[in-house]
Image (tube, rainbow, N blue to C red; front, top):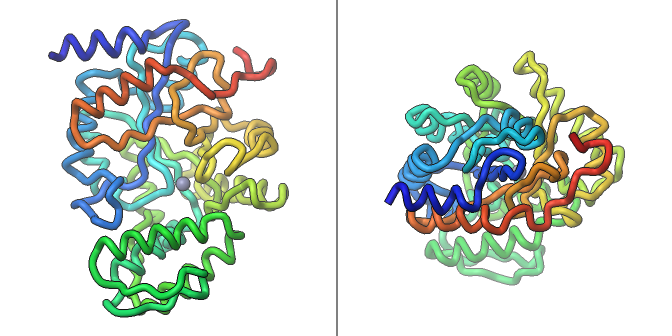
Length: 330
Ligand SMILES: [Zn+2]
């Protein structure tokens, strides 16, 4: 069985000049399943996923993986593991699993939420998770009245609210999410995101820390200067806390053309980051633009499907990943 899977992966995921790099994208790893977050892996799912990677793939630290991708020296079946946003469970739940299998990983932290912050999308989810049952008026959001009762209603309504708010200006979005939480009478958690102390613990444990802006805006809807400030401030806040350079970046939300534009790619390159990552679903090749490297979000619930999905990603290759421009070609 092991040999067969390996053979399949090897065929589509060679190393060297033809090397392919799959960068896996996670956000949270939940202690236990959460019906409001059905797509987030819990400890059990994450454990078998990491066990599968350790058995079948060569998992590299992201910075090293990018270097070796570009110099044509990747091992076959090359994978890197990343987490976005900076959730505390990356330390409390994911790290022990990574350590158990000896796997490196990178956490992209939105610095503005360290030490007790909460992201607007979590505000909405937590508000509906904790709302008292009963009728709520969502007409200020154009969503009419909703009877908050069972978990399905909570989940569906939360998703509708998230879609409604997503592309509003950052401050409006947060204000509306806060107003909603208040309206729902929900007590909100203050420990979802990493503290500075936890961030340092992660870094000391060998987890690479990357930048992810300060407040996780959709860069494409910001003025250029505001976008630049978000990227710079996010990086500096991390460097100050860690007392080391931060050289990797992930675009918030990360969809090319929709969440970031060529202007932001230029900014990140000019700021001397080593590489930047999107959420475009693909694996990367030697000639992929190092400032728009794709990632693979794997949501499968069984080891077989997980492995097939990974093999499928490798087989599909760097589809839709922009190529490096002249100056970035190594
Ligand atoms: Zn993010």
